[in-house]
Image (cartoon, rainbow, N blue to C red; front, side):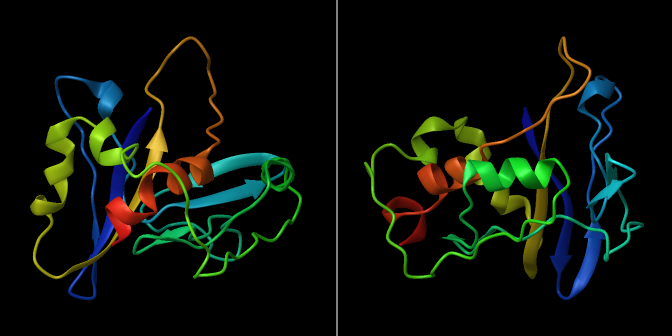
Length: 160
């Protein structure tokens, strides 16, 4: 899977971000603000800010080094099946425990650590998503974002 940026807020102005490399159409990305909508039992990603905010099922789960939502796997499964489970907010002062040397900085391709340097001055928010590029299955259901955020994106190495 790939982690891709689709939209950024720069000096209070929204900017659609995408890539469409001529050398590899499999790396083409979604563009703009995304919504994830459930219509007639089918999940649909709507791009370029054309979605219906009332139908959007996406919620902010991570901000400024803090995990905002902490759900059980059972709740996440129920939401994926279309039930209206409300994400559970996490206390902002909840401690994160673990090995400080087992962190995302030490487990990544080193060049990706500098991607933030490509953001223009005034960048306030970046909207990103995960996407799988092909494979033997026609559909892929990504899960485990909370685990990933809690294990690698919150704690002494990245938050302090």
